[in-house]
Length: 281
Image (cartoon, rainbow, N blue to C red; front, side, top):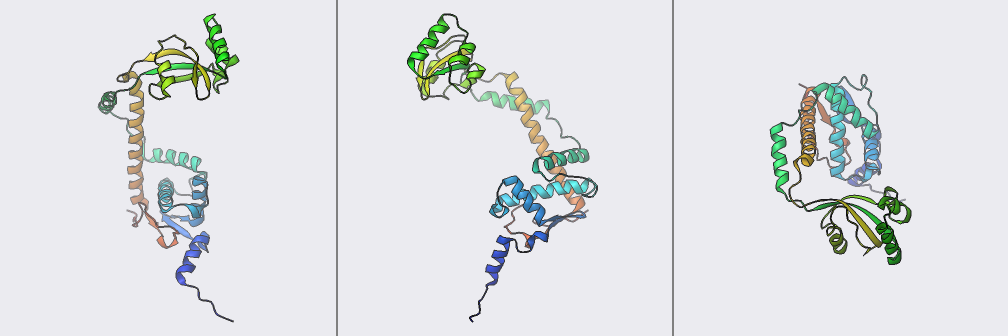
């Protein structure tokens, strides 16, 4: 009987692919606790919705960093024996955020000066005209013309839309919200932005049938109003500050609890932030 030769590299590759014995191993040490291979593999599956073997090096590295960051916060809060943390990714993240806020406090609010600078920058970019629009969508030109005659005779646009329109938003009276000039096919765009507030179009053919549009409000092209931009700017700056605050806090906590990734337990090329051991201070 002929002997078979198994090349070490092939064997190792198969083991990493098939997880030969790795599920029982320790992937990382965080403070006095450990991260098991199984726990991280389960996290990969829960986050990506795919088999953990299929995660790319980049995705696996990013999610391992995220998982270790969370374990750092748990360790700083007292450890897994004292702090209960769910395994479902969304619930886990929410719980860790609360723990992190309890340790590091809330992120600083953006300064009024920073908000004003960003508002000024945003207003420099010209914005196309916008129109608040309702629609009806009908199958034929005859049906559209009949609906238009009813509107001329005083029918309410919303109620008529609910009765005769086959648009997906018919139940809301054809509400489309604000549309931006240049965002539709040219013929529809010309019709809508050729109307004044309160006016109703004649039937116009579109890709899905015949439309009738009602324009409720027109916002001319130009800088967006300050009162519209300000809440968005403040929210965006707060989110940036929160991310930076959290990242700095986790980095400090990692130096306090210590982190060691056991590289030879990884089945992917790790490209993350914990490539070097962090010794507890």
